[in-house]
Amino acid sequence: MTNTLYSSPVADVLARLFADAEKQADEQRAAQANQAPTPEFKTPYERFLSYRNHYLPIDRPYGNLMYSLIRASQAKTVVEFGTSFGISTIFLAAALRDNGGGTVVTTEFIEDKIPTAKKNLSDAGLIDLVQFRIGDAIETLRRPMPGVIDFVFLDGEKSMYLDVLKVLEPGMRRGCLISSDNTDNERTGSLLDYVRDPANGYVSSAVLTPGGTKADSGHEISVRV
Image (tube, rainbow, N blue to C red; front, top):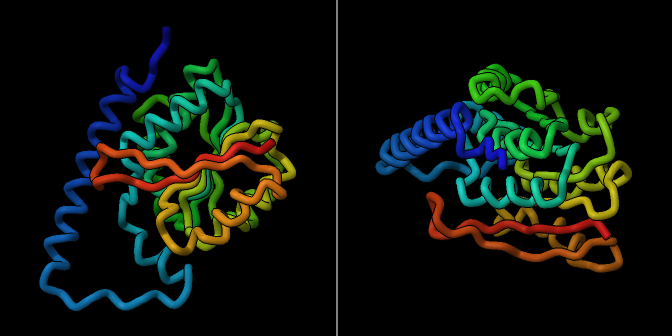
């Protein structure tokens, strides 16, 4: 059985990117150790710009989980909110490759990140499965999709999760899976209230994936019913 995720070149590229991301995180922690606390950002735009050079990767166990969900659901059209440098996109596209094909539509607000993301997807041999969109996700994701939406990954600005979900809802099939990252962040509260209310057409569960760079990482897995 085909398993692109653990084969070259995908496995090699992921190993390199995770190593680079961890090195960057170590350097940032060392630099911040003796600095004053970072001031709170007033707007999502300020927060976006502050992370323009950061990897912001998902943990590998969560990537494995999403790969498994896409394989099991035989998804063909996947939407990703928050490309960054493309680590998560690689997991999504690898699953589509092993499903026989499809498209990841991924959107990123910081245009400067896209060339690096494209190179990483190209190095992994998966760029033919990815459609990149640049700009405000509320606008970029209103454009036509290549097919009915089977899987959604939310990992951009947390306060926008619910707005992005509502933009995508008309194009989702019944049984569409929504995987939301960092749901221990208070800015995801409106999304959690929404998907956990059966009246809105979802069944939803909180999930922890231990074994990554953090002791555990909080997510929400929801299915459109």
